[in-house]
Image: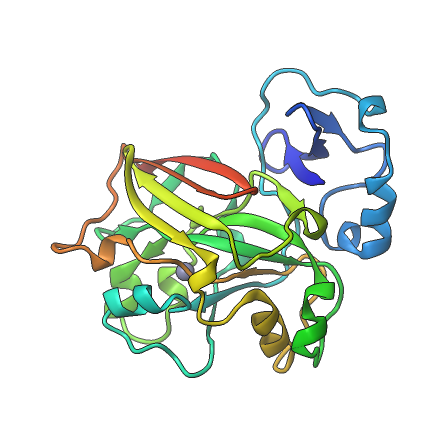
Length: 281
Ligand code: ZN
């Protein structure tokens, strides 16, 4: 299933994308697409619905973040060896973990705001992993059982805030609108192998990132297992699994986003995001 949320910011309704690309309303069946909806029993109940019997949503409504009420937005740094190289960093021995504020989450096609004082706002297409069951001390062989599904994540990053302003990376990753997720949450049954997905990103039509999850240093199962040794992963938590090479920081000279730039990004089987960048007020 491709689960989504549509409507005005803060007033989104749950829906799904049917086999013909039409949005169908799910509000007769679930309150929202959020933690409690993502457990295996609820997903199984939704999976057997006759989608043609669900109310059809007319027009092309705004899409909200594909998951509501995200408790933890956990990011993995330097998880593609060639991206580590372009960042001038060694490939880590263990996953590099940082948090992105959940208040940064926004819809997949919403305008992204370049924060005050920023001149190094950068892009990162990433595979997002959405947790469906509480995971604690999970072995790697069972880790994917705890995954509800996958989505496109844009880990928008301000490099000066992240790297030049001291401390940890969080403040360069957490600005409002720096976390577009969606367009939809694709349930795990539709993604046979999360380690063989192509992912890409363009800036004003020019392809700058072109990679595959096959070159991740730590794969999805390893990351879920690893994180669960240190914290309980809860339904609705999102793990953004790192970006392939081609970010602005790695270009010579570095290239950053400015108001008016259009960024599009996608992952095989998970859909496409499209964002206009604008100055924050
Ligand atoms: Zn990232």
